[in-house]
Image 1 (tube, one colour):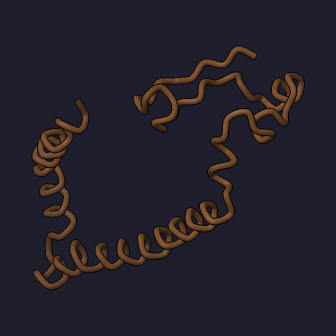
Image 2 (image 1 turned 90 degrees about the vertical axis):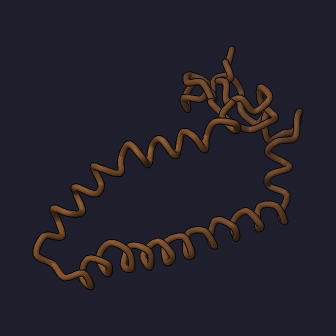
Length: 121
């Protein structure tokens, strides 16, 4: 349902917020030249976003590639491994594990629908 309706949702979101954003930009740019307005609302935020996503996006990709190469991801999701059973019940209770549900969007859990896993320790 989300995959079929997300485009319409975003269109509605942008259309509903457009008057508020336009009013805000008009108020903060009163008395400024067109060059200052374009620079302050388009150029500088775009450059900031490019730098931000370039640095943190590249780092995230690097971390994922290193984890895939070292086998961290396969060890974490392997069933019956020592990774999942390295804590006993007392250690889990002391560290606070299991007292909150783990909501995941991983397709391996509940078909990827994001339902919460319930723990029974």
